[in-house]
Image (cartoon, rainbow, N blue to C red):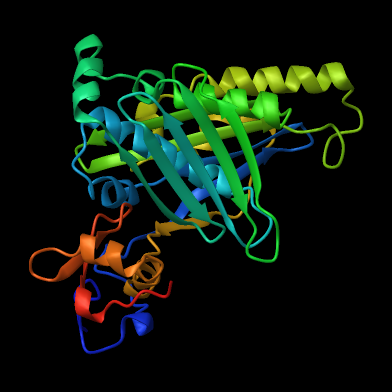
Length: 323
């Protein structure tokens, strides 16, 4: 099979083949759960080797890689709540050393993301602390959560100011202000002996209606939530990132005495959706003068996919503007 990043005899608009990226699926990457007849539901996300495949595509400082891994795990967890075909994306834009952070995940679990860092300002941040958290890396700006329900439906987007030291705190602020939802979020990402690993634990307090014990009044429901919070607070990064500890067993450690019910696990996969055809369509939107400016001395135009970090080469003579 020819390399789709390189020119070939096949017209560009027909080349929808997957580029040479890892073909990785984690079958039990997302595990939903709830506590029987209590106002608690959640999702445990563990990317396993998928984290290494996604994060190793870019040569970033470990602090930036850690933030990207947290964003990927968080986005996979939030996409796990989708009840329609589409995708969920997280985007952060700020004035800090990492002015752009983006991750998205489809309802089928196809996951991708990247972070763009500014070397000079990153060096200044590293002078303050060796492993800066999200607040210092992103600076002042906004965090956008977007649900894309496909071309037939309007997109739903929630935007909040970047507030908090960590990405988990920023997301909790979004839940409280935009969704009026109480949640507990823990994110972990680190390089282990097996490579980069990333995980997210998301727990929500649901309304006291369907599925809740009618004998539980509001005070009893609140007590059940506080108990779940206390138990979730014992969770450690080491547990979240341990490949040898199955997700169901980890949840059992936390909630076995609270009526734990584990739902059907969902797969997560390497989900960059770039193709030569898509990028050719982007190029066609530019004018002839712009295309000439993009062309290198050898008469070729190179476009990079930010997600998979692959360079697609197009012969300028073969690219025609549609404008």
